View 1 (cartoon, rainbow, N blue to C red):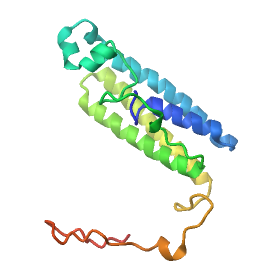
View 2 (cartoon, helix red, strand yellow):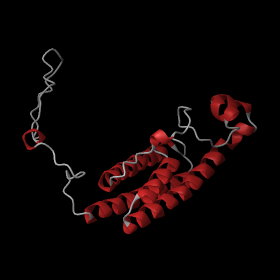
View 3 (cartoon, rainbow, N blue to C red):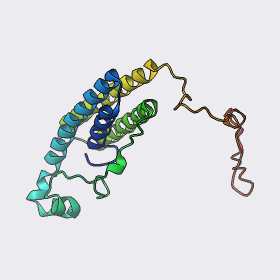
View 4 (cartoon, rainbow, N blue to C red):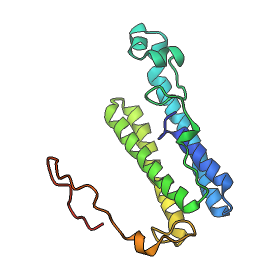
Amino acid sequence: FGGANGELAAAMQYSIQGINTDDPMLKDLLMDIGTEELSHLEVIGTLARMHLKPMKTMREDAEADPLLAITGGGGVNLFNSRGNAWTADYLKITGQPEVDLRNNIAAEARAKITYERLIDFCDDQGTQDALQFLMTREITHMKAFMLALDSMGLSPLEIGSIQPTPELVDQYFNDSTDEDGDGSTDMAGSW
């Protein structure tokens, strides 16, 4: 709800990216998904409120998590799971569409994994069904962002307008030889 991988952060990030872009098709996509993320915020808020409601009347439940019971009144609030307030620092907005889309794809992947973990943690079938729906929509958003990125016709490393230094771009430094450690980390991968 109020964390770095939450629906509020996604809604704000995509909407602001949409407002900032000059590309009308990309703006439409970002605003559509940003708006949908707000509806996801409502679903998550409703689920959280349903599960937190006993904190209002049952002392034992309130004592299990005083932060939620006292500061939030047993309801949702803009805090992450550690009690830290929501912050705009969660938003990743560069103004460079290909960078923002790649970040959005990663954000949707993080949200998908978060929903998976919530489903595994939950034993209420109705909540699991709602989380399954939201998890599936994250994949839908990933696909849309991937298609938008593909439509730009850029190679995976084509970022911005200034090209990297040719003699450095493919140079790899093996700086972790682990000579004094328990095992070898010099595995000489293809990268």
